[in-house]
Image 1 (tube, rainbow, N blue to C red):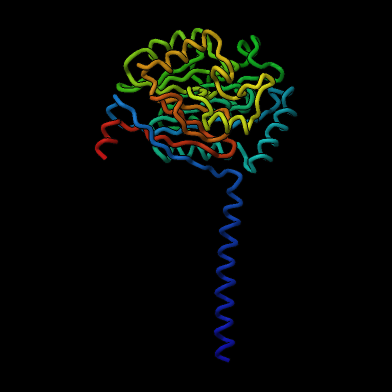
Image 2 (image 1 turned 90 degrees about the vertical axis):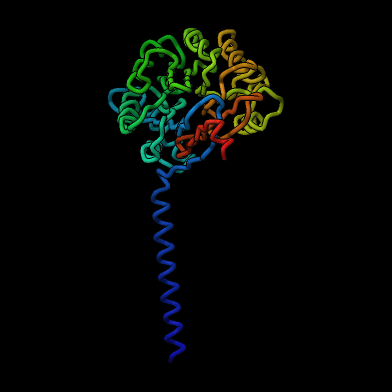
Length: 324
């Protein structure tokens, strides 16, 4: 009888443990629709006097639509459901949780690096604005290749005239660039223009990119590293395939999305031997990558926000790294 009693106790213990495990798995599964994955990276910059804590978010592709945009209701639903099938997550919940991550992480700056909205629909902009207003610190917002598309309007004159202004509550500017200047660091953002840059935006940023204060440059489309067969380009080609011309489709560079003269002026400033650009932060390719774009500049690319991906970046003064 004693042996039977012991066996019953063992069975009860095992069943209790199984029940706890089942509850844990169920809880994790229930949270899966909005769970986030934060990659942590450190970037050391010479010339800054303090450390900064930043969160890099891109490609959340918020696709909410209501009666104010009746022509896009079906497309918005199809896009939203496609992202959910791919990721197994709800982009609205993941965006909320990513903003919460930045609030609770007490970041110095939250960086939104494009394709936060999947289209310039009022409901999407309203939702993102409401979430961003929860931040208790500054943020920097650049647009990608989807933020202000509208149906068939994609980087068209009508898109810029009618739909880009809808993003003003998010970008806080009518310009195609944005700046966050600290006493020892500049974070400069420039909007995507169908894999190119706006002329006035380039002209406005060039003095900073040719100055002496360290610069972090934020854009949507990552730069093609200045050396052949980079791991970034190989992975990009494997994920996205090549263009009909045999070029990389998702990076900006000489043998990828070829820069025009205006865009090349900005790239020349970034890649100059005496460039103050210490780092480039980007999104667009929907997978995480850290690489060097040349001998002096680090590039960090965040994974897709609709998967719940983001990168927390500890920007560290070079003397602090030496002290360690």
